[in-house]
Image 1 (cartoon, rainbow over the protein chains, first blue to last red):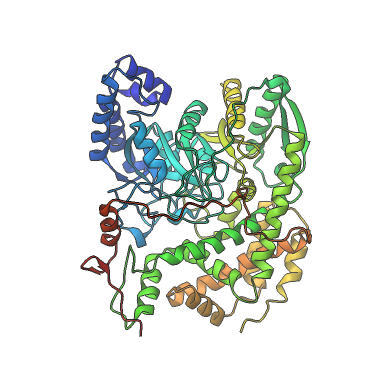
Image 2 (cartoon, helix red, strand yellow):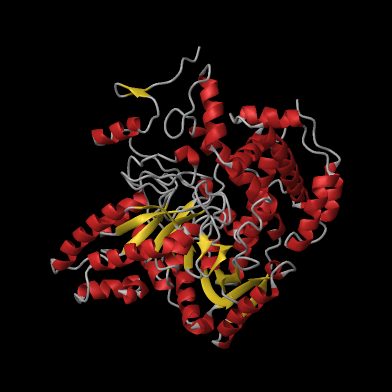
Length: 474
Length: 135
């Protein structure tokens, strides 16, 4: 059974077609792997074994009917635990939603189910996706499968670790400031953050609504592309989703112009990481790609800008957790206000509280202009930076993170140090453009991800370039 | 109610003459912040927590004072950023610029959905969500 765990989506699909094995076998192999390994890794918050086996049986019926069947039919996956799967618990990694059962499916789940997907379980995350290490989960810390003393990255750490540890063929995560790309980089898997609006956010528990975006974590670029194709598109239930004008992009590496932002290679990057990224760039150059140094002059403001805008939006979004509509409720006070104060005070962990406080402060009378308005202006500058850059280049290459996975506990008590982990990933989000993380090497045991950034709705371009890079690196 | 937090600006701007990406250097600034900077007053933390409807313990208030002071000081880097009158805030700050509307029609949804939603409430009676008396 071991080899079933190594197969990609396309390989499993072909195997089902050729009747080499059935989905129930593949599903059982993954469930066994979770049982064997997850005590140490801690990728899953809930294993939905019953649902998975039921879906696998249904997929096997579709496959055995002999007709064509969708690519994701019968393929076992995992879902970040802030995306709703009807009838299953959805905690967002928070005590305030510890016993919350999803009343409906997120649109991405409806789309996966329509393809006949098999859902193995819900994966761990930083509470409400707020964090870069999955240490902010109220339930457990997800360890890096390459070195159990290191973090998996975050906030989609459970999703990345599950794919890296062969506990799922692929996973759906969400990226608000780097939450797909960073754990993908730390765990050595492919992670795609789509253009804002390319994928419906309906049924994803909201953190920062102008930034949140659902995307795939997968074994390789081909898989990421298959999953993206399955989940993208306009959804009447998400007013910000659009039918993306995503074109099929054909290119020759010799015609490609790759931008290297000089601001991303200043002091602060681990020299070993820099070496691996530069090596990947050199390989593209050997194949004839034109390497162009570019400037993203407002880079130094990105982290501060992000950590104003995201908490402001979070403080508004998390107002819905009031102890009345759902989740933890602490009664016993004198009045309604006591229910609010106590339910939220006891239900939220340290990081959501911190961000609610920052957001409330920055939006409060007297500070709005200095913080929120200023950050919105800077956001426009960051968007201009990328617009200018994409006049000169097709794609941008950069590291995903200045270092490899750090030690469990290393930054846990220092919120600001944790925020700075996002230095290469937040600008992309503030601009709303797509980017992916592709594993291109290792420092010791720990993987290093190359970030490939594209212009609006050019997912196919960055995936195409990623696929070419994947071949060069192997 | 709030006093503007002067005094902290000068030092942080000097500090940011160097690159933000220099993380190692940043750690030493951070250590300095904690000691050199005047913290947000405790009363302000309590006031913000009340606005945010969060009950904080004494310990949490102290930690919040320290963390928020350092984080807000860090935000001063934005003062260096170009200010451009053309950068006015519009309602859209993303690339999605067109309005998305639907026809004003009743959309049929299964009764089970309404039931599921009410069931999620911690306190309910006869298909309604129960709330403590407001007045």
